[in-house]
Length: 172
Image 1 (cartoon, one colour):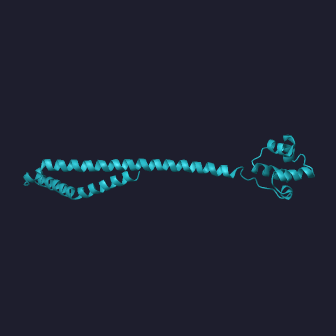
Image 2: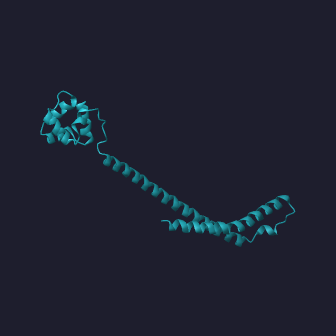
Image 3: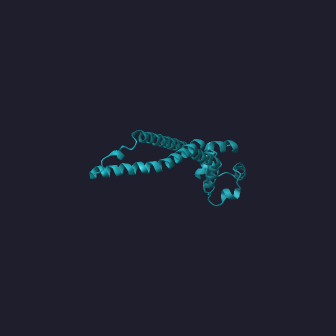
């Protein structure tokens, strides 16, 4: 048990066999033999070992100690670094999506203006058509319905797009 506990505690403190040997004023091979269970430290060395490892002698000689992570702070730091990188990537993606959305809204505004200009220039030519033919009548009604719907919906879409553009540009 001493050998297993000593090794687990040494590792949890982040010490190599060489570093522990220097602190105890022994050679590394001595530490290796203790941890392999090939020999044991004498009483004086056991007390010094407990002081260096900041662990009571009873713990060294008692039940098996589970190995703990060498450097919890370092592990947490590395995990936080990964999380920070992921958050930075997420922020970049959100900015890119916001920029694309802003350009889509600008394109919608331009399309609405162009369609309005075309409608003003062509002055509803279907109004002068001869509606005695069923095909012409259906086509004329379809054009009129699309124009009527566009004239009513486009201003709302235009205002919504302008508000969306303002909100996208103000959130940078």
